Length: 215
View 1: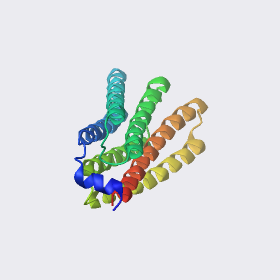
View 2 (view 1 turned 90 degrees about the horizontal axis):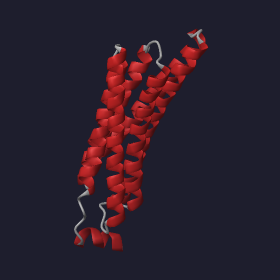
View 3 (view 1 turned 45 degrees about the vertical axis):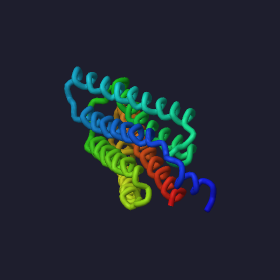
View 4 (view 1 turned 180 degrees about the vertical axis):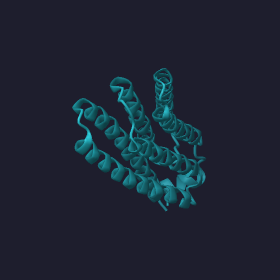
């Protein structure tokens, strides 16, 4: 038995990280849901209000990230490897950042409309965020990681579906959009959405790494 295993048995693991991970994941779900609301909002004044709310959630996510990093620098015993705590925290933050990036692009570009593919991408983003929250809540029970594995598989499937929607929309834009400026606007927004879902898959990869190391 190696030293790290001995410490896991005889030294109480500091549990303060789990509520912070869960709060960060919950904030991610709220951000994804709020972004979907943004795409369904047609009134320009209401849309600006929702964009501000997305930004507020992004700021809140930054606070969770900073708190976790501060705890990491001052805590001797951690529930799993420090580099994995850092990677999980950063990847959760990245997803929220890209969602906010898409919202900010909507504010700047003011596209004329959102096609069904944009709505589908936002639906997939909410699905991925929900699976991340489920998996993160299971980190307290790493001896039985099956639910985490199931969520990771679902996230990977969601990312594949999002790629299909993204490539279909990109092809459609270049084939049917005659307004070059409008094409650029929509391309920028849907690319940022696609990156957000890619970052969700990065969270899944970190969770898999944690499971492998702890098992």
